[in-house]
Length: 490
Ligand SMILES: Cc1cc2nc3c(=O)[nH]c(=O)nc-3n(C[C@H](O)[C@H](O)[C@H](O)COP(=O)(O)OP(=O)(O)OC[C@H]3O[C@@H](n4cnc5c(N)ncnc54)[C@H](O)[C@@H]3O)c2cc1C
Image (tube, rainbow, N blue to C red; front, top):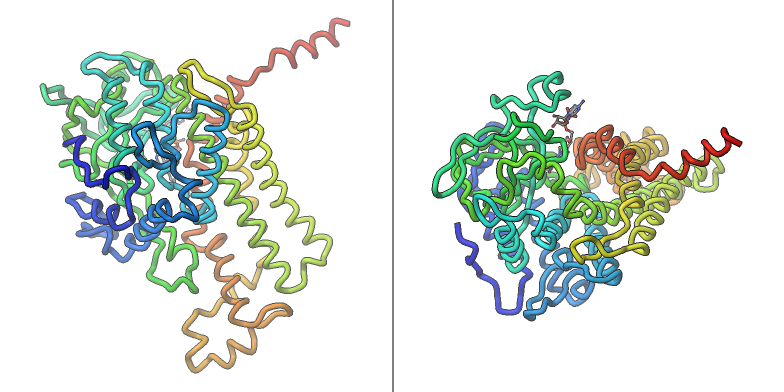
């Protein structure tokens, strides 16, 4: 594994879509629907997601988007803005603009654009002192890895969660080495790991996988074999991805407007005695350090920032969708319908307010970097998993049977075309436009693709109760409790 493999043009740290797709054609061991995938860029369930991501990478070269999504570093290399280490409030805002721009390209439906992971990596590298040294120079390894990913525009996935075989064990903060990823051996070349991890979204479409501990890793002696952080290429021998079914069923953009474009795929990751070279290890056998890593480096705050910007784009899309549905039939004049859609607007405006508030109150952290204020975007991170299902429900309530009155594109040119043209019209839309709109609504709120989006929003940042408990812990409650006390004592 080399950190120098650099096929980049001088001065360009951003890749073209074609370069990205080329990089995916390697020996990766990806399984889907009972078969090993020979080439993820050619597989019918995976190729269009890869094409979409490639088209997004191409946009970094387009003058229309380049200023918003890239920056030129001190060496004169143009890189993605998500790698920019923020040294001022302006830098934080610049990063927010880039996050929002990337999310707009899919209206938040491609949840795992590379800027999410890039933000985490940037934060770890910019606070590499936290990692220190040990078995190897962990801090330097991280800086090298960041430089490699940044200057080669590599796409990352990550996996943070160990599978559980028993809830009782989980509650005690223990793992079973029958399923959980653990260290089995140490060699001169590196450590050897075995077990499984959940869940690598974008796994088949990524260049590298980060295998980091979650904050759930309890600091105990028995968790030492489960405590580590590393990154390796997806093509590393012994690494296997087992995918869920694809929601891209090969339908046209008309028939499946979202699934035909934004299938980002989730996979369980198996490590069959995988050798991780020391230069790719960032934490080793230190549960306490692992447990604190995302918080202490502020990596979690930078990830929340990307997430809030992306969720704003997604909430705005739902507002647009609901308004379009209401306008199609003239329901937008109905006070009750307006009230329902206003709920979606509140969601968008709540996320916007929280995002801007965090950026406006950006401040320097203990590493000399700027971070958005945590509390507003942590609020957004905790709220959105609860608000998103309601957005989906609003589409279902407003769309009702129209979500089922959805003939396919072919029906507009076959022998039932006359019926379809005649009977699917509504007040403000002819049949074709009405069907197109409701097929979009269906894909957002009913289809396998839409249902997975809902599950993703509920869980991708972690279990809701555990995130909420962490929020409670950090919240400054003393002043408020003092006021209650004052009243009681007066
Ligand atoms: C569509 C989708 C995409 C996802 N993408 C990713 C991804 O790309 N990368 C990634 O890492 N994860 C991803 N996730 C996984 C996500 O992080 C987990 O789903 C989430 O953390 C909940 O974990 P769980 O499903 O295993 O449920 P849980 O059973 O809640 O377990 C979660 C963790 O909590 C611990 N736990 C459970 N109960 C307790 C308790 N009482 N006290 C203390 N600890 C407890 C367990 O040990 C376990 O580690 C994704 C999830 C979904 C649904």
